[in-house]
Length: 450
Length: 171
Image 1 (cartoon, rainbow over the protein chains, first blue to last red):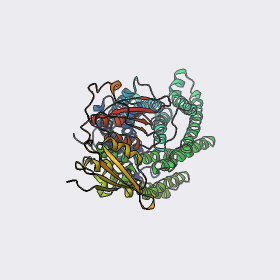
Image 2 (image 1 turned 90 degrees about the vertical axis):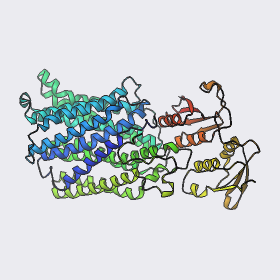
Image 3 (image 1 turned 30 degrees about the horizontal axis):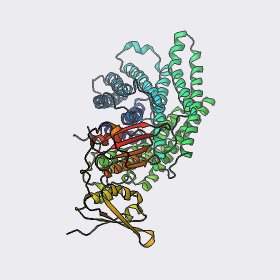
Image 4 (image 1 turned 45 degrees about the vertical axis):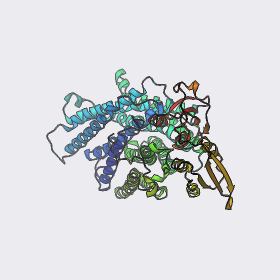
């Protein structure tokens, strides 16, 4: 079969992800959820899960379905399950959002939406992780894939905890009402979800994508090993601290284990920073393209988030300002990296899909011709500037400034999404070069039927 | 009656940072029997001499204004072929029976997807049964698919420095 190296449903995952990203920001601009509502209010949970599941997790799944087989030079095992996983995740997310809306009193359906979400989302993530994990199983794992392995274990842990929350909130399992999820499991759900699944996987992917596109040496370095070990141990401590402490009846251990986890996480990030600096400094490609340039904004946001976490912990104000920190992690680091890498991945895959069959036979446009970098430079700048202002506004408790900043990120996101649509439809390529005979113009986000 | 030489000016393509090889091979494929190709380029296209010689063309180059070059490729009588005339060895699948590479490419220092583009351009310029060797920055999964789809054979392995060396035999 032609082009099975191109993942069939990745563009559909990306399209759904971008839909939720834009949708969540629209809600934030009109003042839905935090800071107008409380951080744990159902309205806030709607926005938070549109970002973490709808946008970031679908983006990560779509990217991994494409990227992992290339990384380990093996075809995806169970490709037929990729679409069911997407449908399961989408249905689960719609149930979850509907369930939160019901808790907020906005709608009433009489359907146990949260319970359905508590089943569909873990099943969807389990299928996705199963396909990816099954592909990794038994392969000699190159370094970046080891990060993804930790990421896959983390997404399962996060999804199971999330399902328990949803079931508790739905009132379907009275036994769960006894447990104090908020202090015990919620920090794990957040830390393992954002830190393990999304960040650790993203770090792994960046270890291959950055050297690949900047032509930097990507031999395994000792510092990269420290990043993995320190990060993996930190995540394990974070996940197991509470259950082990309650098992042995020593609740104090939880706090010290979590502090140790934060310190190890810091060590991991410092060495990651050193590796990133190495990639940028030793690149053979002098001109840095916009995707790698914009990614620096995300790396700075990651460094800033780490510094903020340490400062808030030291000053004992983490509880008070946790929202600002989470906003910076989700929008500055994860979304910033996601947007910047989509800006390369989408044109690249589109180019392969369209011009692969005529490559070497007919003149083809360059991958860079599918986007218009100069005008998009501005939008990435607007995006990262707005995120910085937004985080500062949350710290300073200025809700109206926060909404203005969110307007900035929304505008920039819409501009970048439009550019991706133009790239998919080859609109930036001069007409004469656009479709040489034999080229296959791609569909916007659905795979071609052969 | 011989047709006049087909003229191709690749200077605008190169000035825009493009890669003219595809356009040149397309022009060569479209030539009538006996027809020549008049090429205008900003430098003397030495690599092309070898590639087109394989196809039975003889180059004649002269420098024109501003350091640009005009090269006329004329078919050598009776030798021109469009790629199908060379008979394939019987044992095509066994790489030990493959001929020495007609072209060697070093595509390590190129940004993706250029290593694949250059390699396929080289393969498309071969005649059936000829081989091409290329050094690539990593194992080229997308290239494998394309080679298979086009009916070419290959074998490859990592070299000690972690680069991928591939030998491709045009089908």
